[in-house]
Length: 370
Ligand SMILES: Nc1ncnc2c1ncn2[C@@H]1O[C@H](COP(=O)(O)OP(=O)(O)OP(=O)(O)O)[C@@H](O)[C@H]1O
Ligand SMILES: [Mg+2]
Image (tube, rainbow, N blue to C red; front, side, top):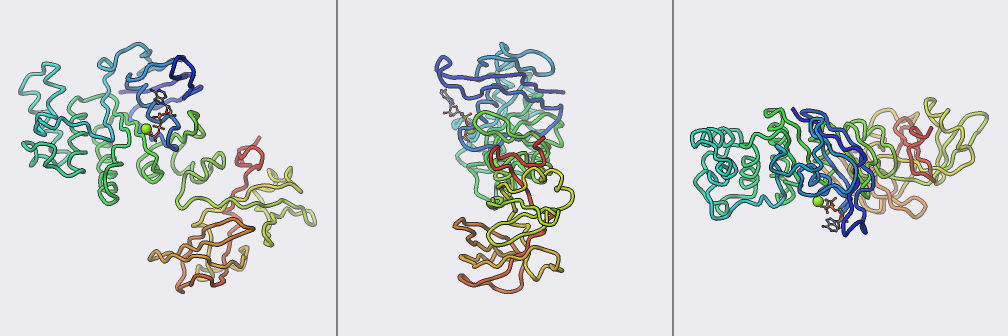
């Protein structure tokens, strides 16, 4: 079993001149699959490397299984790390690559063989054991890198963008393989990516990071349904959530949200929170997939907008419509039987129940504002 706990951990480089992680507290449960996501440079790899012991900790405490590991060297941490670059030894066969760490530990030959064969079977790379890495495809190399980590039977798997060198199809395949692997091995996985789809599909819980800070740590479902702020809302979901300048007004005692010549009644469960925004600007958030077309059932109680489709992308079962509102580009993903041409005006509908409301000053979801 392995739990990981950061307690007020800070990390700086260049003798404290550059602070990359100001104050990180995070608890990862045993057997959990946790994904760290965030834009380039936000500190994902640094966080992972601190768990591995490849990066020292400037202040605070890091615990693995409630044991303080700040000063424990990487080799004594019972952790295996898989990198984006695979880092296989080019002159060694697949078998030798996988056996290498065990050989260094002077593991008996028989045991090495058993472990390598066990990993090769799970990863479906048995036919390639005598090949050199250069004679393998990207996906096969990636599996060897995973196998090399598996044979060590670590308590914790750390994976840093392991799929970013693969093409889209292989990435999808490997995604499923890694989640299956996690289920089979029943160990703690910490996985770094900047791909929100990977995060959403693989994680038990996701850490959304920005500038070395945790914006939100929760299940994929929760992040999608209840993003804490505009950063998380914009990061989770694809295409990105639309942010529309809007205003809350009170009409005959009822709250309405008004934007770009449209308006709708604020749903009952959000009225209490939005009371304090009467006659104030807010940011209305609408996910592209929450827009509706007239072809999608009864739209009589929905908020109707007339827009001009600047670009229309037919995606098969769905169509992406790009349109402008008050000079800002937005995107709707609708199901429609008709082909909508560029420049054509069309109706879009919003279900008020699917709308998000963000505080313009703090960018926080008004639901989360106390
Ligand atoms: N050895 C170092 N010395 C100084 N700054 C560093 C060092 N290593 C990393 N940094 C800085 O720390 C910040 C976080 O880097 P990190 O590699 O953790 O980002 P990341 O989230 O993994 O990004 P990416 O998605 O691009 O891999 C960056 O601004 C980076 O320039
Ligand atoms: Mg990185």
